[in-house]
Figure: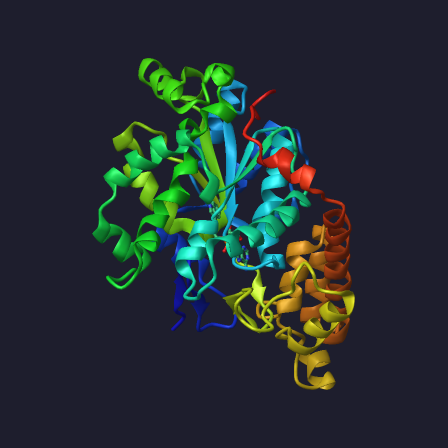
Length: 416
Ligand code: TYM
């Protein structure tokens, strides 16, 4: 029987065709993204075709996206911001990490909305059992931010921050969230035990806090100019002006792979108790590990990933030597019964990163009929991935510390 486990720490299944996303939806209580939802996105943004991530069912699950789109249509305005993040566990991102960032950048472009990106250096410091200091994770954060900026975010509408250097507005909501969540809930949802350190146990609320616009009045509210930065003046201002009317109803749309759901599911349960809107979520499936679709691509598993720093030679070697194939054992058999795209990892990578939905369909037909051989399929995959990685490296190499400073400076990012 197929068995799928998905948590922020573990993603695995015993089935080579991959994780069972239907069960995931049922267990987590999300909904499938329907063709009606995609139609509404096209309508609101004047697009005839959406990014292949959406056309190809890679972003597959949501909560309340349908309601948000109806509101946008009724009010003729996109009153929301996008929120995503990264836990800097090393200097390198892999292709799987790129998926939510590429999707967020795309949605920022078509909806023209602000983006907030949280870098959880605290998370990785608490979670790793080694002697690395916090500064180690901060230095990884800097390298990761270069990769994130290279995805093409709008510098006037995007704010990137590290948890370890965060500001007072955020604390206000963080305190309220912490008060509403019980320790036993965090232990059962995230599997923490009494041996876990306090940072680890309290971390989830850090990841939840950016899901409310009121955590960022200095970025999102038209009153940003009035908000004092001096701590005493700031408290006095907040006592007299506790809400920011223009962002009270601004919604948050979270973009992630579905492993991040435990944080946001928990937050949605308590949001009404602190008079905040439940965040909307949009989740993707996982880019597979080279070894098979039953595991996600992961930086911590040897040879499971294509990194954004890989050379064309490394990409070619990894795909040719490690990518799990749905091809048959002999040429004759392959010609006779065809390959299996349900388990073929190179095919999945083409599905994720080819910008041409029609070519993906043709490859699928030719491979399953036996016309296209495994070597030929892998060659196409290598060419698509090499192109993506080289283009990314070219842009990333030009990113300067001044660029980082611009994205990381707290400032108003909600102008139309
Ligand atoms: P992290 O750094 O583990 O992963 C960053 C983002 O990449 C997604 N992801 C993948 N997506 C597709 N295929 C894969 N193989 C794959 N591996 C990872 C993750 O779901 C994530 O969206 N705690 C978070 C950082 C974070 C965050 C957030 C993420 C803070 N706030 C808000 C999303 C939304 C983390 O460690 O992600």
